[in-house]
Image 1 (cartoon, rainbow, N blue to C red):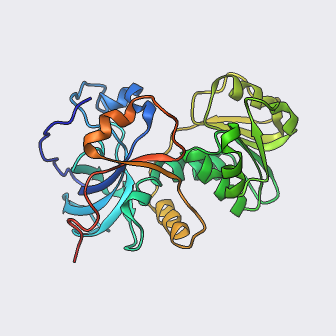
Image 2: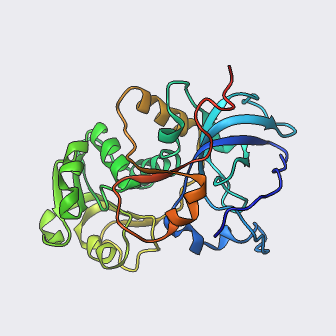
Image 3: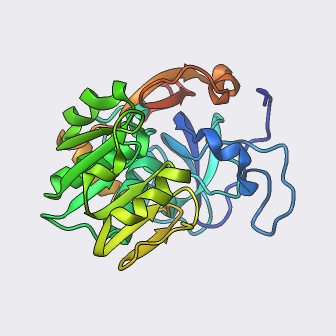
Length: 297
């Protein structure tokens, strides 16, 4: 990966061009085929990674409605097109939502993938309801931390897992119980209605036995090899949802939701941000444009 000049993006039908103020990424996305190919599977290198953005609309494609030039927006870039680690990016208008003026771009950029994944996993796929018990793996991570907050607000009993250093943070987000996967036995948590997994592997396999009859095992890592005996197993990939993004922004403004922002680094350091290194709590955000630059007056 390297920083280089790319052509200004083209706004296709129903697109917007966004001047990116802050961008988020998923460390493993460089292994995704769509990072390097288009929808037809054709090579599209060199490509721009990153799929979360917060910024300002600077151009509308033909037929684009519901947004205007100068509007602050945040959301998801398309999987099979150039992404958000750039000064400007083209994105389908339906993938972004208006961003209130009092939400910082850096915070907003941490919300789209984590927020939508957490909501869709818990409620669309997991069918979590008030009074049920949910086991959330990786509860201190970007997705897991938001899932803890959403599940708690929905009236569920929340069990979070992670490392010992994560305990206080996860309990502070509203989890009822924390399990240190390095020193405590996962099976001791008992039966749960929903398992929400972001880890995969052995943890995912062992979690299937914890799902009570009629419950659901949900994962974003891989199709489960082991299924609950009397329940459902779901693997899914997050999908754009403007209405849900708007709802998440409202929760953030109201103080009911707090994305965990970790390191904030300039665009020049984006290649280094992908490199494995010291584990930093929260989501790393790339600041592309200083807030206020290019904002509507």
